Image (spheres, one colour):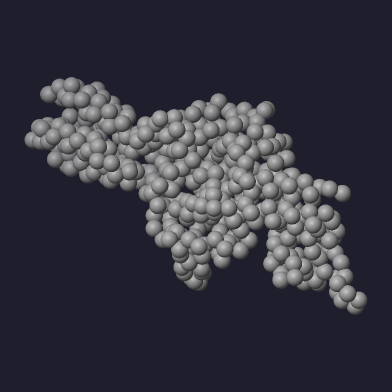
Length: 474
């Protein structure tokens, strides 16, 4: 019996070590620490070979069977359900201890065993944090008027600049009204093209080039001047390098290296990519990017994709990790001391048990969004912290720190994380805000805003604000 228990214990400790190595950066002293601890534990248990193991100790070391998580319909309710992953855990079973009379007193050895695993779990807590604590409470959606304003003031902005780009792309810098009308669906215009042009008459102007010729639309002088300023931002070396690095980091999220081009197209506006970024940007950085073909797992069709030529370790540092390094944290201390900034609006208060869960969840080790942590149990708190880290980093890469919810789910679908994304956005209203303005749902990174203004404004956002000002003129 003793041999079987020792073999089982060492086998599972080896699995724990493998999980640990997947999360470590490969630094030698980080690897030696858990290895030495496991060797010490192995020597300790080996000293018990041939001895009689007490029933108390055998029951304490008995692994429990995994419990299936309770699933509920997906609603605006934080379903923090109790579940355990397929790894092992220790439990102390309640039995009638009156019948357990041992000839040898192993109480001292049992205390040593307990101390060993308490020490290991305290130094490497992410190995033992696979249990999801049970909190079944509604997290209500509370409107944030400031962030709603931040979303609402960009109404029709994307459509306006998209139509502007179509006009500028024409050799004559103008488009026949009939041709422009065919763009209504592709540009997602809220009304007919003619009405849209008339509404923003300070941006667009109609004229008839000659008798009997169809009317055309072109930019007003003010809009054309703003376009030149916008191009100057896109063409500046500093902005080009920043854009290329942010795009590369997007491709590297979750340890991936490629994404279908249709996903990048969905995020093009929020990333601040030029209208013709494939020709004017990607073609100039062959050492960064390569266009390849991937297979759509659902349809089996081949899709064009963009991949990073090689993994760039210097870019695989998240915004939260950079912030921690600026405070002097490094290594394990950085990983364990990172918590997500939480900003709750006035009138919003979490239930006490939910608040306690969030506080404990924040203390879990931070797993970088650039690491491949798919080995973590999808129902564990640790996996949810990794999912939130990916969402947080993705929004941090965007120039306005917000995007449509559908864009996030499209990205998550490519990673196989769409369902996790949905849950994380609902579970953490202090990190993410979902606005229902302008005919869609927009996810906003709360920490990036003070009231309705960005804390750190990208130069391209400044140009967009000038477009908003021009659109609002009557």
